[in-house]
Image (cartoon, rainbow, N blue to C red; front, side):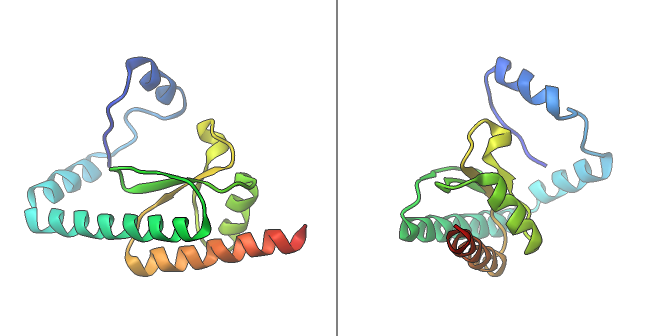
Length: 136
């Protein structure tokens, strides 16, 4: 579940590739219930904020530029082939969104998760980058 604000022309592009009614009734009801649960909502916001700051710190340590966001994902410039990173991460059990599909090759979009998952992902990401350097 999610929402967004965008220029109507941009929304038109999204609807060309995404079914606008792809969320079933059960998921909609669960989302409404989650939004009504203030304690759960606070926990999710806290987890997301902590995860986002963890990624920012890691990316700064790697010298990689990222986009500051209020969403539940982080977008950054890998300075490498995003599709190769995508494929290598898939083999390690991580699914990301390569930037090429978004019109920004070289970038990847990673969803923020629990801190344990975020740390595991960054470990795998660094391994992939190291492997790519060794394969040159």
